[in-house]
Length: 137
Length: 137
Length: 137
Length: 137
Image (cartoon, rainbow over all chains, first blue to last red):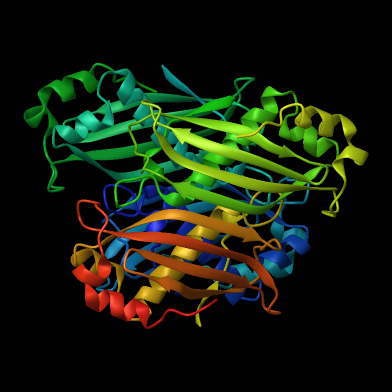
């Protein structure tokens, strides 16, 4: 399973003393970027191929508050690498391996004109690469 | 239905030229704050009563990109005002009344020690007030 | 003097219970955008003319903390509308007219290729318009 | 000189395709936090001592745009570790060692009631520690 380390920033806290709930989608994106780098498909290469992604839906579940001063691991799983849709699942865990936050994002593939495409037809090499990482969460 | 105006900030755009997906939960929160003000239950009064809220789950659906330079209306509905849970539904529409973004947040009521409470028992006046705004989305 | 209302967002607070210091530049930008709208020179028109702006320097002074739940007025002054440089000055005041925050931004004019230009030569109408608002802070 | 690595987040870009100018103060804060950790004075220990910091002034200079997809080094220098004031200087450099951004922040020491204090008197060990890192930028 792919993993990045998350060190919350002071700026990400709110006056309840916890990481604000709007920050987790930013952590998720950071994990997607790092994952794409890791598998040899960095964002600038995706863009250079004329490929775009649009987020269709995002779900975030808050199990425990995350705090400044603690360190976390964010696990990313490719739960569906389809011809049209790409689903990632995320799990944020603290140092004791407690689940702090989990979520899912649904992306669709677009061309440069932001029209939906069939990735398997247009960029089979990208489709196959992502498919090889697909797994149940 | 309760409504606020949203004028996207330049800082909220990303290099795709659209409002970044992590910003919508901030708009939602802005709507909750304005709604609570409107019904005579401002956040500082909620806090003064020793009440806290924790977000348990959030779902965001992206129908169309929102852009800097346009103006939007964000509609908020109380879809469930329960003894333990509070569910809001959000719909962001553009000037032509097209649905741009929609979402839902699930909050639970806590006391000052962040332990879950039964709002109907502890603060029946708050419970009744919110209940009176409950409606199907 | 040009003025906008600032209602701090909950998300902008930090765990010290105040508005985080990185938020004020975002308020400043909001004031610049509103000012340009007001004088009939909206950002999209500036961009449509092939004009770009780059920030060269920004100074922010913190006199008192701003807080969620309070309302503020942000005053903007064009302190220099030059051929190359554009300087804005900002003053954030609370409801009792106390100075909470003040700052300055220095922008330079660029063309579409992000090369510096002489605004008075390339777009005299924009230069004259801004010049007419120049005043000492 | 103390240094951290900065990997810009996609969310930090704006529609000009560069890192938004309001993000640099967040990078600076990240450097301060990492520096304090490094010298054995983590933020939670500072807070546990009843010490608070307030930012009085911040200056940010933009030499070149920073971009998503590139990596940067952020250098932090303690330019003044006084009894009342603490000044940090920052320099962000790209992989070719070009200066991209530089800045300065002025903090003052407060007690738990947010009243200014003389650090050398109240917490000489903290004062001495920081003093030992003071250097010209």
